[in-house]
Image 1 (cartoon, rainbow, N blue to C red):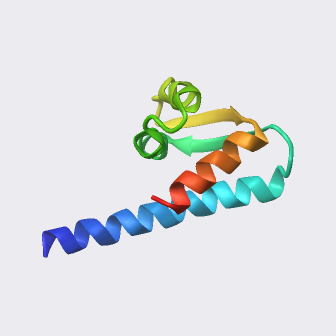
Image 2 (image 1 turned 90 degrees about the horizontal axis):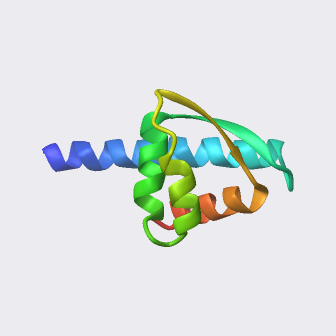
Length: 87
């Protein structure tokens, strides 16, 4: 029962994060932009990225406030989207 609840919560968090990233990419197509992520989103992204992209991991790991305004390049957003989609 508890694991079902945790799995559902994880899917919901993933869907919300995917929506934020997709919306951001739509607004900032092929441009650098600033995305606002809360601390738990940043932590989740760092966990998902792991060693797949050490530069992006270290960039995001520096953001630990409750709300973070992060400047990302378009290729970094594309990378994050792929990682979240296939995780």
